[in-house]
Structures are given as C-alpha cells and as structure tokens.
Length: 318
Image (cartoon, rainbow, N blue to C red; front, side):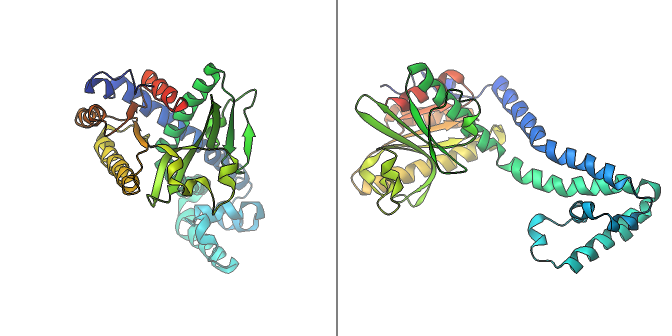
C-alpha cells in the first residue's frame, strides 16, 4: 500500500491554527478532569475540618491526618522516610506558622495549602498528558480502521499485561492498550507500544512485528530480540504546543535515524514513520523531503483526521 495519500505537499503536514486551538482545549479539559479528585478531596477536607474551632484541635481528628500531612507540604514519597513523630512535628509547624495566624480563616488556609501540594502532583501528571492523549488518539483511529475493515484483534491490557479478545463495546479501551495483535490474509502482525528495541538499545514508541502473541511470552526468546521480525518502527509526538514542535521533531528524527542505522548494520531495513500533533513549516519541509527521498516511509499529522486514518490503514496493511 502507498504511503499517506493525503500528503501531496509539505503544507499538507502543517498544523493549522484551528487544530492547535482544538489541541490546547482538549488538553485543558483533560487537566480539569484529572483535577476532579483533588478538588473533591479538598471539599471533604474543608467539611471535616469545620468540626473544630481551633487550629490545634485538628490534630485530634484522626481522619484528617493524611490531609494535614499533605497541607504541610509533604509529598507521598517523603512520608516513607519519616517517623510518626516527624509527621506530627510537620503538622504542628504548619498549624503554628500558617493556620493560627490566619485567625478565623484557618480552614480556608488549610484547604489552600492542601491544594498547593496536590497541584504539584497534578503538574507531574499533566507534563506527560500530551503524550498520553496522542497515544490514545492514534489507538482510537487504529481501532476504528480495524472495526471498519471487519478485522478481529486482540489487545494487551497495560495494567494486567493480559491479552484480551476484541470486546463487543470497545469504548475507552484506548486508555489501557499496551499492544495489539491482528491477522490479515496470511500475515500476523503485532503492534507493541513503548518498548526498548534490543538492536537499537533505546525506547521506540511504536514497533510493528511479524508474529503472534505466543512469540512474545518467552522473555529470552521473545520476538523483540529477532531483528528479522521487525516490519516498521515509528515515533509518535503528541505535544500540541507550536513552541516545542521543532524540538519534538529533532528528537524524533534522531531516534528514527538511530533506528535505521542500527538495523542497517544488521543488513535489515524495516520501514520507519512519524506521527506528530504539532508540525510547523520548517519541520514540515524536512518531513516531506524525507518522504520524497524514501528516507522516511510514512508520516501523518496527528491533528489531521484524514492523515491519521490513512497512516492507520497503512499500518493495518503492512
């Protein structure tokens, strides 16, 4: 099958202002969704704390201890290194230095400090969010191509590592997929997400191999160690911020060249491809040039539904 037929010029690859806007809004909504548990915990903290009339009385409410530790600025990781006495000392320090000076507003002060600490945890999740959303969008498109083609597939659950049959209702499973297996004609294909490819000695976002699920099970004899089984390898960059687009492409381009060089040394030439959400003019020209020269076998703008569907169709038919 031909590479992405939706790409006729370098301009076709460029992320439009509307696509960037949509990407940022999607990211913001997902961040808000991630924040929901923290907001609800803060509400519960306020409700429970309202039962006391003085800041120092908070220490007597056992159900508040973890919340008080968080408001004190202690992360979950730090708690593993502290004794109960250390933890109590931290809470007393917060009460004395911040809650008591707040007077009648000490409960609001407590909630604010709780949310500040939780904000760090949310920030850590949010930093990886663009990549996660990019993977989900790619997988959702790939599953759509499977469904439209009438192809059965099996998928590996990221949490349990168990391989499961195609469900009747596949709503939301793109959030849990670690790998996919499908057959078309006499071809068996595996898509494995985020593995260290031994011959490359680096993590690769998307690896497509010739084989079955059983070929993955024996770790030492796993198919991932057999270079002749690699059909295609790709890099997926879900970041939507135009300011970071060039850097994402440089990272991906270097990774793809490392892949080609590593396999070339073993006299093998699997196909390589790139999928990116933020593609600016200069990098679009580079990508298009590589496509025309054959250095890169396929590419797509993740923000362009037609290009994404086209590259997913290409993957299914490899």
